[in-house]
Length: 427
Image (tube, rainbow, N blue to C red; front, top):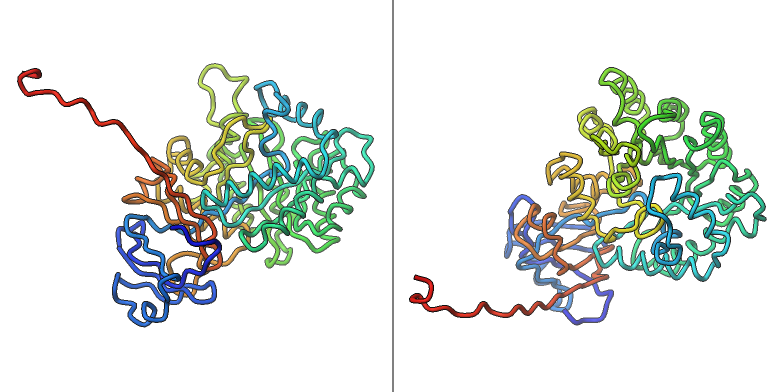
């Protein structure tokens, strides 16, 4: 596929769905209008010109993943910082020491590179936290908004290619004036990490008060530890009667995975009653959590199975990529799905749902995928089925956003043939 991008895709031909069906998908105006067995959408086939038909023979067609919890301002900084490998506290210290030296241009360059890598992998919507850069205590408002200015620039540059939503990540040392300055630039949601504050409940209440005053949704880093504060219950109760058109979500929620069955059931009931979305972040939490437990090291994940069983809206994302909080990461939702299978004990179908439909739900995005009336947000991966593509994460991919092809990756592989050996030699 060598046509210039982006280009319209009005008919997806011969695509294999996760359930094994081989179908054609008709698209009009960025919306799926029909799905049928290959060759049965005669009207759509006739209406689409050759340039608007995408042949997906040999590809698995998936709802495009969404990334519900990224840090584009931190991404790809590991090699620049050379931080010590360690737990959450060590990561925070190394990041804060580096962050005051960053320029808007340097942040934007890394963020742009990371966002385009995610798009190439199939992610067409990203929610990124952006630090309110006042953690070192002497920052001015102009310094505090550097990250926000950089990510807003990238969001605007890539607006035709992917959806980017921004969250103001306010540390407990960030004054309200700095948070307001970031939000005034057009950042979408209020965020923070109250469990890291000296008084977690007070910081939680402060952040929620800012959101309520400004009429914004909230996405908080929540209880990212194996012990210590449990703030999600108070958070859920506080937003229970807030307008539902806003989004309220809690990322990490590692502490839930350490609670007794009885206590966990109580907390999940509060989360469910408030329709609070929970975002699991397996790669970063598997890396950061458990360093103090050399024997029987805990997995550091939230209580996935119990949350799903209770009907809570659950999403999953990659979180940090190659920064002090996670030195690795492939910018690929299939990596996240694979970790949910191996470390979270989810089925492949459940795992992929968390990085696609679940992520879109928590982010407040419209339904997408191969269903009439759904948004035409797709990832086509060369392979034989869902398990195959999660297992191998093939790089051959076609990405469709708003009914247009926005990224294509085609891999050529040459492998030397095994040396021929005669039957006599092997007898």
